[in-house]
Image (cartoon, rainbow, N blue to C red):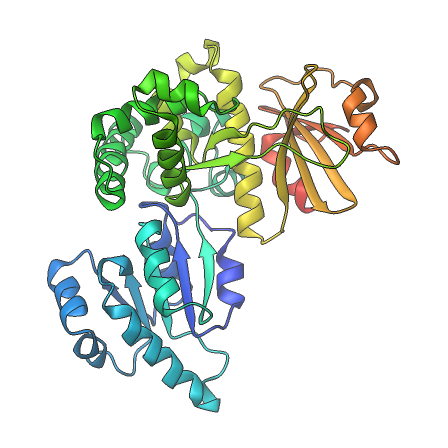
Length: 390
């Protein structure tokens, strides 16, 4: 079953000579590229023989496909190939009849290696697209599914396109191969056992303020190592930090970031959940649903290139609102995430909000788990995309 991706339009409309689609393994990069334009010749550098040729003789590698549009998957494995790709793109663009046409599409799941190669060879010559796992809206547009099931499985396309795949095994294999091995090896992490413990403890803190020193004590490493590991997971599109909103009037707001996983399936499995049902009655249900709401906002922002800034709001006096979305200097939206639909507090009851937003209080909505439609300030997560795009 094919599940349409919201980012398709942005990639398809772009006409730059080189396109680079980044994202974690198994998020659907290859499937999407082949779906958008099957005329691209697929070359995967996961293949050892192709990788060896691309690395040792990149000119010969490209000469075999001289007049073809190329899709090179896992391009980061052959860093010697990138200068040759640069020359190919430059020569192509010199011919006026070749303007506004994409001939190279590159993907990579190792963001650290991709960034290094791109900065050295393709800077200023390529358009970049960050791809993530499926959003709630994408899944529900393709099939019927409960929000709780999506929360547990995450947005991995294979788990939603093929009902025969066991989510627990898929996620275990993913954590074992990508998180525990690929990321550790690519990043030169020496303390692999401590790193795995760190990822599990971090998953247990989704939606919470990130305390580097406290996390370091629990893992058994120093806070600098924790900061380095957090940075690695950010670059590899595993987690995202949400910074606190800051303005000249917000000196009494908490300054620590909050942490979220970019896929709730990974967070659930790292927490130890083996099925969706027990999460409903657990203390983690609220924070995991908050994480799901963040993912929906984050993915929508990336897929439609909305340019939204996402913050959290928390004052030293205890005022707390999950998300503050800024579209432009004068357009703000507060979003509170709750599993159930409850009465929403009035923003005028928040002294620090009144202090910062003197002229006009932002709009304030509650995003909750279930519901058939949008009712005033109450927006079910299934309709969050419609609300934000409108």
